[in-house]
Every structure is written in C-alpha cells, then in structure tokens.
Amino acid sequence: MTAPLLEMTDLRIEFTDADGNRAEALRGVDLSVDSGEVLGIVGESGSGKSIAMMAFLQLLPRGARVTGSAKFRGEELIGMSSARIRKIRGKAIGCIFQDPLSAFNPVLRLGDQIAEAILLHDRSMSRRTALKEVERLFELVAIPQPAKRIRQYPHEFSGGMRQRAMIAMALANRPELVIADEPTTALDVTVQAQILDLLGDLRKELGIGLVMITHDLGVVAGIADRIAVMYGGRIVERGPTDPLFYNTAHPYTAGLIGAVPTLDGTGALRQIEGTPPSIFNRPPGCSFAPRCTVAQPVCHQTDPALRVTGATDSACHFPLTTVTPEVAE
Ligand SMILES: Nc1ncnc2c1ncn2[C@@H]1O[C@H](COP(=O)(O)OP(=O)(O)OP(=O)(O)O)[C@@H](O)[C@H]1O
Ligand code: SF4
Ligand SMILES: [Mg+2]
Image 1: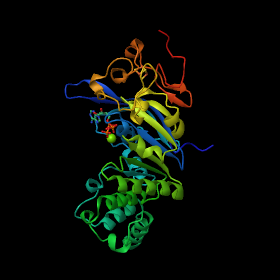
Image 2: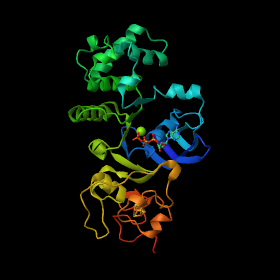
Image 3: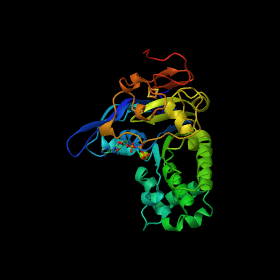
Image 4: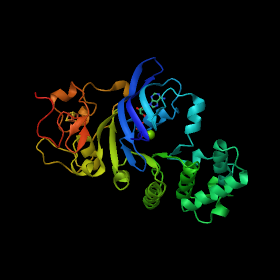
C-alpha cells in the first residue's frame, strides 16, 4: 500500500505573544489527502486553516513551535532541513494564494517569473525551453494567446487571469499536491466559478491531490471529495462531502450551512451569531460553546473529542445526527 500524499497526525502549533504568553493556535489536527483527491478545509477567520498548511511547508515565523507529524508520501516534513523542504516546496507541492498580485513581482514579465520557478528546480533546462513550458501551462489554465501573454506584466492581467497565472505557477514543476488557500476570495462570483471549474478539471486531468482552504462551504461543495471543518484551532467535523452537508453532525457546520440548530429541533435558516475566540482567550470546554444555540452545561466544562458520529466524525457532546449524547448529565 502506498503512503497517503499528505498525512498529518496530532499537528500542533504554539505562538508566544509580546508579553511572553503562550497559546496553542493549532490543537492536534489529523488529516490525510490521497492522489487525485480534493480535501476542503473550511472555517471562519482564525480557525487555523492556513497555519496548518504553513507548518509543514515551514513557512511559519521563527517563534512558532510545531509538534506532531506531517508526512508527504511517507516522508516527515516537521523538522526537515530547510534545504530539503525547499526542494519539495514549489516542486512536489505547489501553492496558490488568495492575492496573486502580491505573489508576483510587478516589474518582471509573468513568463519570466514562472520560467524562473521552473529553472530553480531544473538547472539543466534552457530559459527558452522553460518559456515554452510556461506557454504550455498558460494554455493548460486557459489563458488566451499564451505566446503574447507570457511577455506581459502582472498589472496587464485581470484578477481572474492573474489567478490563472498563479495556478500555472503552482503547476510549473508538475506537483503531486497543490494547496490552494482562499484561491477565489478576491474574485467576483462568475470568475470564482470559472476558477473552481478549472481547478476541478486540472485535478482530474493531472491526477494531483488538492487541498482547498476557504471560509465558504459553498466554494468547496462542488469540488471537494472530503471536507474538514475547523474551529478554534481544531477539526470539529470531518467526512465525505455529501454526508457533511446532508447528515451534518456538528452545530458549527450546520451554522456554516446556514441552518442554526435550536434546542426544540426546529432549526432556523440563519447564520451563526458572534465571533470566534482569540487563541489567547479561548473559553474552557468546547470553544464553540459561547456561540452554540444547543450548548449544555457540560459543553462549557469539557472539550469533546473528535469521534465517529454517524456518517462523519465530529467533536460535539450532542451531535445532531445521533440521539445518544456522548456525556450524560
Ligand atoms: N505569527 C503569529 N503569532 C501569533 N498568532 C498567530 C500568528 N499567525 C497566526 N496566528 C493565530 O493563529 C490562528 C490561526 O491563524 P490562521 O492564519 O491559520 O487562520 P485562518 O483560519 O487561515 O484564518 P483566515 O480565514 O483569516 O485566513 C489565528 O488566531 C491567528 O491569530
Ligand atoms: S459540544 Fe456543546 S457547545 Fe460544542 S458544539 Fe456540541 S452542543 Fe455545541
Ligand atoms: Mg488563512
């Protein structure tokens, strides 16, 4: 059996604030992604979606303390030498970020920048061949007139076209895994749909694994095979996409879908009220308790473990899909 493309086990990240207080921003995350699979990671701002990915790419600031395991094709990335991780990052693992404008150098032609990324990992290739490869990549991501476009600067591209160029950059070294962090947030709805279609097609065509990070469940609904919902630095629900939507176990996931549960079971079609806690001021027990419409006293005392609760795994004392609560009062 081959190892999963990416496998995280009990991944934890601790930060220290200016006063020397330490807090865990990521609190034991377990995830895996296989080749050809799309994993959606969803949650509100500050839930730990980006740092989870940045931890194993070694892109976190120096003060961050990372423990646990994150393996790429069975090879441990946590604690890996920076020389070795540089060979994997941008080659076997490609990244797409929210803001392509800041990812590209404004004074260099896009074709040259992407060619440079190719040459960085293949010194034997000529610049001319690398530029031809960029042209091919532009064609792959449906940028019209690629021969002309590779000679243009980032500001000459529209937002959607720039994001396509960024996808081309992520694919430049034929990665096995692509991590897309809010790749469509800055785009209008129509362009967003086009980019999602493109990512879905590329996954099928190239057989790559794809991690899609977003605050919007709707963005991953049509593209993800499995979804992990994060809140307060941990996974609160995890499972295949359909059951996560149709047999939702966690009240937070239900809130993201837009149907806040109520104690009388009627449910209400509205969003979650309140805001997520800061990592330095997390409430005891279930982090979601202050905002949860079905919280019970035990929720404010004990943080529930992530466990099988029907068709998905969830971390809730009173999952919406099971009749027997985990902890009896
Ligand atoms: N360098 C840092 N020092 C201290 N805390 C940090 C640092 N970087 C991130 N954090 C904290 O870690 C938590 C998770 O951050 P992260 O960037 O992963 O959130 P996110 O889920 O990606 O949110 P967003 O949707 O806003 O991108 C946040 O509460 C954030 O304040
Ligand atoms: S454990 Fe309690 S507070 Fe947390 S989500 Fe479940 S019901 Fe709500
Ligand atoms: Mg983020």
